[in-house]
Image 1 (cartoon, rainbow, N blue to C red):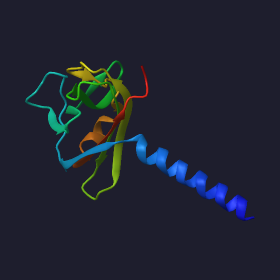
Image 2: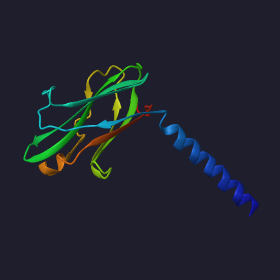
Image 3: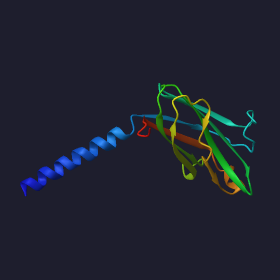
Image 4: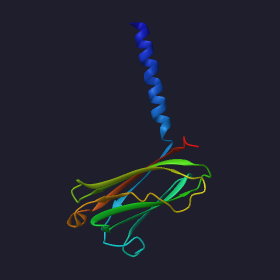
Length: 151
């Protein structure tokens, strides 16, 4: 029994180590917003949120509009690698109504090249009814960064 407890303890410590070392840093930003219908370069209509640390700078562009045949909420980040080495990014944005209830969310992960500038996570969008956009009152962004495991 004591041997099994030691094995379980060692396993738990290893799992805790790998989970805690998976993401080295996190960036967070939240705020109120009124999302407008726009195209990607309608800068006067886009909610633009900058998040930055020593490794990356992300310019998150939030807007709504038609995407192919569906109405979409886009929250696409444009990422610049500031650290000079390949980095893994896990990007998440949640949108809430005035009561704090979840309305929509997007998520995407990627390996960001060492020399990236304006690297887009272009799938950071969700198809939702146009009328639902009007309910959105705030956002919360979290970006986790870690050393890239890829070559």
